[in-house]
Amino acid sequence: MEDQPTNDGCGSNCGCHGEPGGEPGGTSRRTLLKAAGVTLGAAAFAKALSPIVNWSRENLSVDEFLQKHYRELDKDQLAAVLRHLEEDARKNYGAEVTIGDHRPQKGVKFGYALNLSICIGCRRCAEACHHENNHDRGTNNSYIRVLEMQKGSMDMEHGNVHYDHPVPHPDKFYMPVQCQQCDNPPCVHVCPVEATWKEDDGIVVVDYNWCIGCRYCEAACPYHARRFNWTKPSIPKEEINPKQSYLSNRIRPQGVMEKCTFCLHRTREGQMPACLEACPTGARVFGNLLDPESEIRKVIDNKRVFVLKEELGTRPSFFYFFDE
Amino acid sequence: MFFGVIAVIAIWFLGALAMPWLQRDRDRPGRAFSDKVIGETLHPVVIHRPDGPPMVDSGKLDAHGQPVMVACATCHDTREPNFNTNGGAQLKEFHLGLNYSHGDQTCLSCHNAEDYGTLKRADGRTLEYTDTMQLCAQCHGPQFRDYQNGSHGGMTGYWDLKQGPRERNTCTGCHDPHHPKFPQVMPVFPPKPIIGEAVKPAGKDHSH
Image (cartoon, rainbow over all chains, first blue to last red; front, side):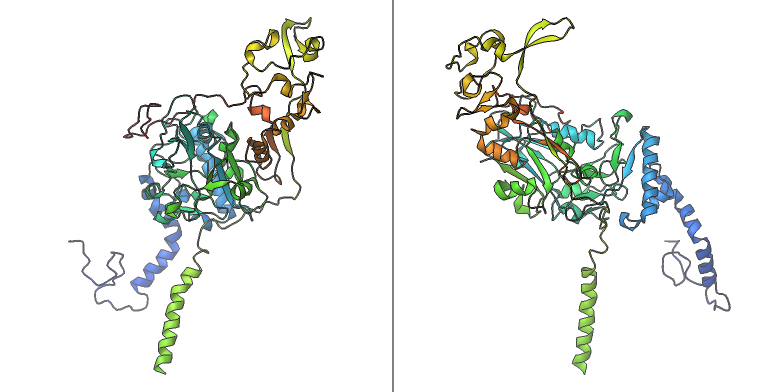
């Protein structure tokens, strides 16, 4: 405890305790320090932070490290961050990519439905997701897990993802599970740094540059929908999907969480998600829940629809249904 | 007087509690909407239909090296139609080996014995090959209804027709009309086990 300051002060070794017994006359030391701080502050702060930046294994610029919360960037600052990230992709992967900032459309809330009577468990949706969202090739990562379930059971905890026989097996049905874009998302509630939130079109997103990788959200999600980047994703440059978005499929850094965003870089431009287009059986239905004429609303209005683990009160935007 | 002061303090205190709660949405990230202007015009939904009547490959090449394709009528115009044929095993020549499994339908339930270049509805009316969906819809009403509602048959393109077009299949784009049940396929893209995860014997786990 020999470093303990002996004088009264704020207790944080900041030098705010004055000279013992020193009476401020004219210019006090405190005023002097304040003035110096203001003058030097802006430039010195960035310089002072450089050691912290160096701790990171990533090659972060001070700008990138300091970036305020996503919402607070103005248009020019945001553009600078996006150009910087594109530069990173060029440097780290040799790929020319465009990273956009796709915002929600007014009057749109996305919903997704999946017909369990039709799905044959071929896993083409998981494969399409893998390529669309620039997942790590080494781990075959995908936002979609297809569970092989015993007919008569709805317990997803007993689903098997490692089936490798011709499908569909007559005794089984197949249930692809991805992020349910809950209206009451447990993953968002547990995030200690507000790096994940729910947007106005219902998509739960992650700011990969703000995420600290604590994995609380992964533990909180009852649908096992969140993934952690244990390593720097490895993708051959010719396989990288160059159409990217800040909050969705840009290549994630190591040590952050990622999740399905209903392909917001596509869907916020009016396109279908990649998993829907890849489905060879047409088991998937996507659309705007607020439009009473949309395909998704016709499913919800006319089919026997259920949500996964309804008892948890997560209020998913992802629905499952059977044909009659 | 005393109670007045207490009341003012209480109101101030409650207000201080309520204000952050009322403002909680203002601090939330991601509030900005897209400023893209979207028109009201709807883009088309293109359905991939068959081009016309099918042709049979004769197995021969013409002078230009192109396969010689034969219309159904080439053979069938001079033959008596057999209204009883209802299985693949009874078929001959070009149709040998056709995998047929579609209920108890006979060939001529759908094919038109008067004109093999067209199809025939249940009530006898002729139907062009480009309109096969009407033929299937005679029996498969729920599927046709779901197709029209967008929950059967799949699609590619745009969920929002104000922003772009959409493409859809016709029935026979996915189902072989002669054996319409989807065949079994091998699943693609097996997930790799996470370190520490116990993988059950693949495909042999029938315990639950």
